Length: 180
Image (cartoon, rainbow, N blue to C red; front, side):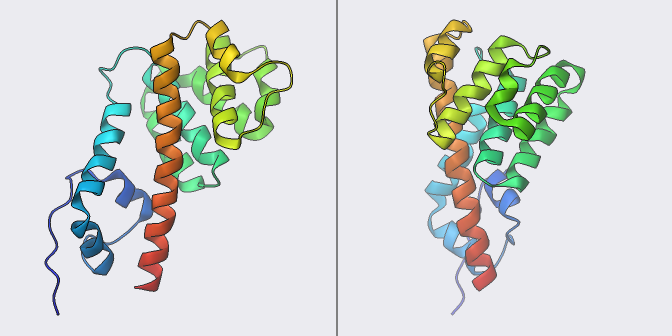
């Protein structure tokens, strides 16, 4: 029995991260759930749209890479870090902060070379991803003190939720592909 595979979005970041074939049983399964694939990619596109105001792209890619790293998804963390690197020199401080947070965790937030806003963003990402409260004050209070607006805090929280969802979908797709 041959299953017709419906086209998926031209850019399917989740499939790319999972490394799944564009044809085969997993592709057919995803085609049967084309809305889920399309909405997942639509969420990615909306969250990382360069024209979106509020959080900068370097802040968004740094938070995404950190959320993926905390979710034990090194390939996704690397992919988001690569997108951050592609932003060029404007992202150098975000890359340094991200690397510090990945190496040292939230203790790196006190490093002198880290922008307070980015440190608060990464600390909030850590709190949302690991559910570990910060010792001195809540991560939510930190992002408010770092002058993030309510829409920026909501966008950051949505981004972290999306990345943690995405890494789980990637893991499931890889498991399916391995068993196919």
